[in-house]
Image (cartoon, rainbow, N blue to C red; front, side, top):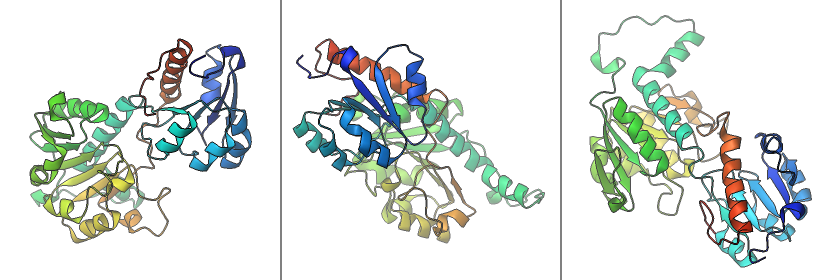
Length: 325
């Protein structure tokens, strides 16, 4: 066939993830397609020569391509695809599709949860709980919990996740400013949309800055010392994108000096976050371990994308859903 993809009877899929239960959920679909599952890099290296199709995210290493003579399709388990060498895949005739959209609802809900947590000081309440400390009422207005109504949220990357976050923020009566590369694509629920190049112009207006953008050469270290310096001292940074979108050293300085009020981070430059990172001990930081997209429905959402792309290739179509390569 034109795609080079084996028939259903001859296909082998390899699910490669440290935790997700892809094989279990796939078996419930009754496809009778042969599949294997690995949970470590060592096992992945050993089994990838058998695979025509791979579902993978964090376990992928570009050198594995040399060990995969049958490989025709990678369905990424994650929406981000910065870990893949696209040129190498294209040269090898391997197609790549992202899981964009599979976690849009989950990540946007996580982002609004982090925004609410910082506004309502849930992180401080949890700290006090661990210390068995009942905090008294606060006279200083600047130190109290706050409401979201009337606050301004800047969403960096008004794509599927950012667009959904804008809808949620509007339900709390926030004013939403979104940035996107193509402003003409529409603003959706956002009140304003500006090009990416205007980010520094809108940061001084933000009470919350939420990163929902992909990691690209343009977004790496996008939030640097200059961007952090443009934010209000009362503003919070919310990162549900990628850790490398932020200059982490500059963020630590900003948090330590009080030049921004706090940060809620679902991702860090190095994951797991090193034990000696100052971020762990900062009272104005809330950390979740890159779990924004992780829900009980995630496996099935990604498998829906896989089945759609397999069907497209078997029909002889050339365009994949969420095609990258």
